[in-house]
Length: 107
Length: 119
Image (cartoon, rainbow over all chains, first blue to last red; front, side, top):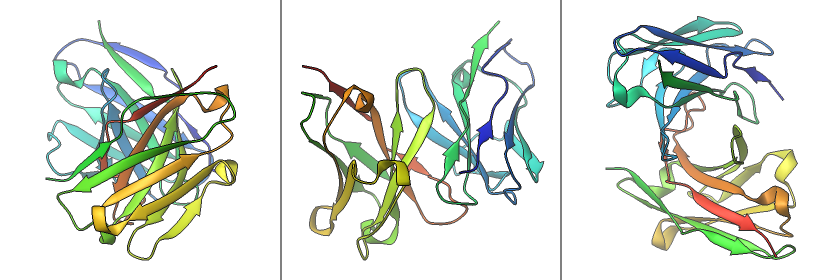
């Protein structure tokens, strides 16, 4: 199975900050990288698919980039509602696998 | 709007089985995959498998073969997951999620169902 690594398990930031969350795959996943947000109440939402494509209804302050094995999610202007845990997931090879998550907290 | 409504929390005894449901609405049930994902407390997400209700094809994570069984009822637009021979390791929140098969992305998720295995 492909291993997905999010080296930062938690991150503190202030409202208005630009935040970047990283994710690394154990092998080339050809941009089949998706990002999810899990709120403290457990609700999970897709934010970005195929590295950089914004899912319907997701604010434009979210963006994604990367290639090969290294990917990142950027929140350009942190808002209160963005406080959540963020997971990456590879969709290149079965089984789909997820990173362990990066918990975003307010400083 | 697309919605996936899951059944309520379950408290089950070790060795028993449990069936969780995921009722879909707002889209054509038979045209999208339904995935199931496990999340243990404080842990990440683990993919269990998918079912394609259009032809009831299934695909399982090797780790969950023999543990999970996925089914779907087209008449009620409901997907089910049965977990058998439950142990404390199966205590978790289980999510269903939809995908169109593109890019491996799961675009809408249910609210999750908590399963607690305890005597």
